[in-house]
Image (cartoon, rainbow, N blue to C red):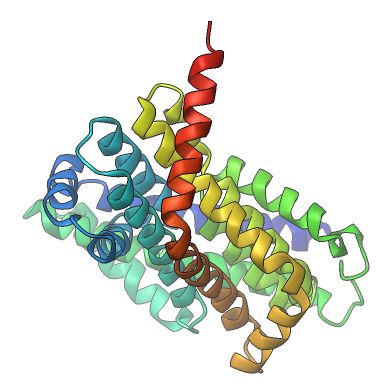
Length: 313
């Protein structure tokens, strides 16, 4: 038991190392260039959603994209509608990495690490170094996932599981998801861990879903903290980010069991894909379902910000 937990922790550590390696490589793309790109092309809701999706694929961080959107809204470089579209697109974009983890790509890991290491330590070109960091990072991610999977394999036939624990209470699951995202500052790390736990039958899909809802809510923390130093527009877009994920949670929570059955039908023999699809469907549906109510939500956010401003001494 102790060795399995130790190996599982090592797997998480390598996975996080891979995520940070990918992110640090892609961060070399300057925020100024991304801000210029967003400012010049995010002139409609559909374009804003598309740009939020693309930029998140580049940065591999929905939190960073949200912070950029809040900062630009604060500087009045983006309208509230455009910034909201970027956040919706960013939430969808962050699901692609988790879909990638659901493929059995461990066989590629040694090649990715080898090629990534060569490119990382070369001094010919900075872009090759960036490519090396991304390659090395994905290799480490696949290694980390495999170690976590192997660490939990002894539990599959040992009867050890959490399916009858307090995690069956969805509110506890949401709380765990929120706290995990606050600590890790990444929903993808938490969801990748859930993929392994559900595959190993330590958690049921029904227990994993509320944790996914909570992980999405918890990733709003950076933008929320930034909003305290922002203008009215910055505060409104930070609040919209929280509202979007709370909205999705309130819509999905009553139908969690039905949602789990639907996910099982989409990928009957692949729990990794079921968890990945849960994250994807949650964010896509939350974005689509909120679009008709944007005007009402913007008016509500305007009132909330005005009330909080009046209460300040």
